[in-house]
Length: 317
Image 1 (cartoon, rainbow, N blue to C red):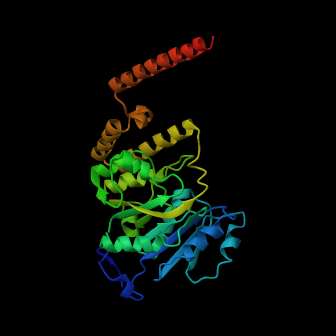
Image 2 (cartoon, helix red, strand yellow; image 1 turned 90 degrees about the horizontal axis):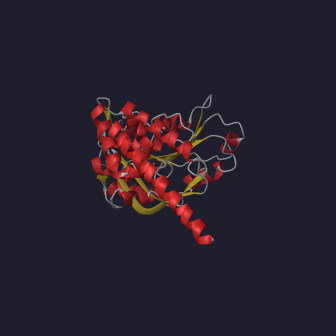
């Protein structure tokens, strides 16, 4: 029984618990590349869920060369389904393969160096039921690393409350949301093109997809429960500001490509109004008057710093 009509995805409000062999609510997707030492923990966390209904654990092996596949093959659970890429693709192309291959109406990512909490699917299912299984929806909770609560607070949102439209963008300009531990309405994300592909050392597609989804009328929600544990996240822990700056500019270029002119202009206006720190990195999209203001502010800042340094020196002698 299909839930596709006229080429468009629809999500019926049904009792999933009493519906046998018609629907699969969840796919836990684990994209992986050369994660031999941690992939086992990610798969075990996906299998050891308290959620009692049928779901699948989809592992997409991105042509790993370090023995990751051998670790995956140690799991003989019927829930585990493995897709092996013939060649290595970039990180978010692999996420898009997960979206395309998944059977569940909702997909929950778990990166191969992360772990889901044992009740993650049960918590998400309860919230989906409460929200009547929305068709354009992205849901996440707390994490042990780079928790999104900070961005929610800066964007003046509330947890356990659905938000959308312009108000959602005011939160998303403060940073990306890792796909790990996040639940997406799978078909609707595919319909907007999946994760944007950005050629950056620090992947920023998790930021771009939120903005794109907002302009495609998605609804969002952060809940007050811990859904996954993150101990590594090497790309997110980069402290080289030049790499971050380049990645953010590339992301903005991608957003200009995938949004229409009106949407992009609206987005940049929100950035300039609400996030002055990020505004510095958007010089490429500033007017001459705006650039002059930034230049003058930088001169004033350097002067203040020189005065502070002189005062510190004089106080020591």
